[in-house]
Image (cartoon, rainbow, N blue to C red; front, side, top):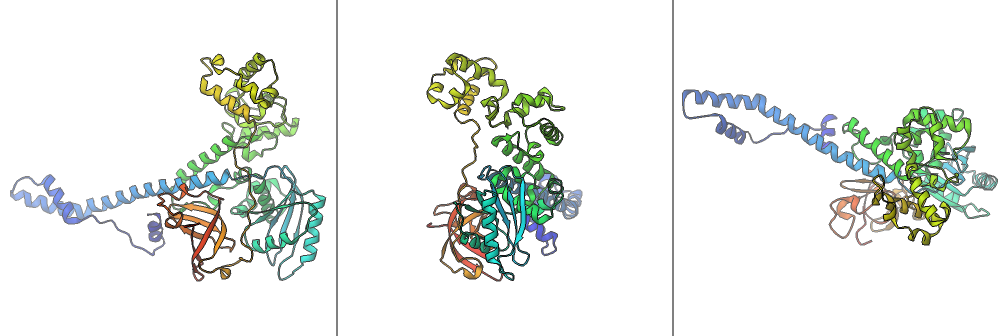
Length: 489
C-alpha cells in the first residue's frame, strides 16, 4: 500500500478505490426507498446523485486513510524490530581500536582510539589505485598497532571496503589482531551533525566518520544513539509513514534498549545518558558536569549530589546506571538501591560479604527467599535480585564473532548462478531479508527462499547481523539486483 501511494505521489500511478456502484445503490435503495410512490423515483434519483458525488468519494477517502494507518503501523513495527536488533548488536567491549574509513582516490582515513573511545591519532593512507602506496601504508599500520597497543581493526563496509580488508589481512603483526567489517550506515550523518562537531570541533567529517566506525565496533548501542534512527538504514518505507508515530516508537525502542543493557555512569556520553529512564538531555548534562568537576562516581548515592536530581528521578534512573569497580559491588548490577537493604540482610544472616554471595553459588543456594518477603518486596522481586547476583554487570548482548566474506568475490562480476557464499543479514522486511555478500550490493532472500518450510514472517527465521550461507539464484547487473536463497543450506 505504501509503495502504491509513493507511486501515486511521484506521478507514475493513478489510484482510485471503486466499490461496485450498482450493488451500493441497491443497498441504499433497500435502506431508504419505501413503497412505490411518485416520491420513490425522486429518492432513487437522489440516491444515484448522492452516491456519485458524495458517498463514493467519501468511501474512497476513508478507505485510503484506514489502509494508510494499517500500513504505517506494520511498517513502523518492522522498523522498530530491526532497530532493536541493531542497537543490541554484539559489542567488542572496551578495547583499543584502529578504525578505517576506506576510499580509493581520496585514500583511507585512519584513526586510533583508546578503550574509552577517545581519539589518539589520525591520518590518511593510500594503499589503493591510483597511488598504490601499499608498502608505506603497511609499515604505517604496523607501527600504529605497535605504538598504540591496538587490539582490533574496524573497517567501514562502504566504498573500497573489500579491497581494504584484503590489504589489512596481508599485513603482518607481532600479535593476533582481529579484523572486523563494520556497517557504516548513518556514519556520514553523524560526522556532519551538531553532536559530532561538539565532540570533535577541530577535526573534519572524514575523521569523525572513522571514529564513529571504531566506536560502533566497541559498543554499537552507545554510538548509534547519536544518530537519528531513520538514518540507520533498516526497515522499509520509513519516509512514507506518519513521522510523529515513527519517532515515538523509535524513541521508545532506543530507551528500552539502553535501559535493558545498562549504562556505565563513568564513561557514558551525554547522548547515551539522555535515554536512561527519567534523565533526559538536561539531567544528563548535569551528570556530565558533576563528573567533570568531581571525578568518577564511586557510588550510585553520589547521583543525589547532581544538580536537579530529585528523589523521584534518582528512583527511576539509578537501577539502569552501572559503576564497575565501585565501592559497592551492587552498584555494578541491576539491583536497585532500594533493594540493597534486603541484600545486606541476606549477607548478615549468612555472616559473609556481598562479594562472597556474588562469587559463591553455594552461599546463594542457602538463601530462603520466603524469609525475606515483605509487603514491599514480593517473591518475584527477590527472585530477580538473586538472578542478578549470579551475573552482576554482565552484558545481556551476545559475544561478537569475526566474519569473513568469500575470498576473491568483490563485485557483481565475480558472481555466477548456483554459487554458495557467506553473508550478513543487513535488513529485514515483510517480504524477505537483505544479505551483504561483499559485492557492494545487498542481495534479497525472498520470504519464499528463507527456509525449507513455510515462513509467515522473516523475523521468525533471521535476525539482523546474523551470519548466514546463501546461494546465488539470479544476477541482474543492469538493475543491480541479486536474488539469493537459503533453501537447503
